[in-house]
Image (cartoon, rainbow, N blue to C red):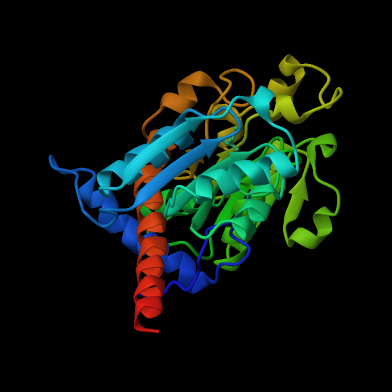
Length: 317
Ligand code: NCD
């Protein structure tokens, strides 16, 4: 198993081989997580600190559980949004934590690029749990694992990512990952919610759900990221649901066995019909949450193996 990275900052630096390595190990952890005793000592003796400068429910819980199941000492710091100050303050916080000798630092931050900056200042492995609208690599990896398990493969699939693409780090990481694995990616949403420079993404763009969903294998819905909007991007939520909200009628244009995904938290009746979200024959939303723990266990395990190799080399020198 080869994974030659010191951090997991984004999908961008990963090769298709790296992605497959993480997913293969995550498959094994998904099996472990279904057993009565869900414990391994892959991270025994290591310290994991979670720093979430932005609200999170599932991602933070998932990283905590992943570290605990692998036997790490896990600490989550309560970082209030009000205490966020850019530049030196973030770096000072990082240096303070670094002095406590953590091995793994899991960071979520509202500013794009903040996690990369922090990784340059510390000497432990850093995992990006979402930075601004930039990247959210473990979300894309858990989505990939969910797709691979449901469809039996992760290549030559047609995948629609729908809704607020412009503000979404989930979309950005997924576009990269799915592209690297040679899938056809379509983006569907109102032009006001498409990022600029979309042509460079190597995707097809639609502003009509019926057209965009035609014959796709996977439908990935996104939340309207209101906290990142500074004006009126949509006429009203009602109008948005009418045009872009996923319901059974719109889904009927996709392949009959198409799966429905959503990273959560979801707004029922805004981007997705509540009953469809709960339909276990179509929706894999709960499965995504389950795979999240397995993927984070795999990512932290691989980074820890590299830490140990590095430490062993330093001792020999
Ligand atoms: C996503 C995020 O935080 O980027 N949520 C998550 O990690 N499950 C998507 C979102 O907030 O809409």
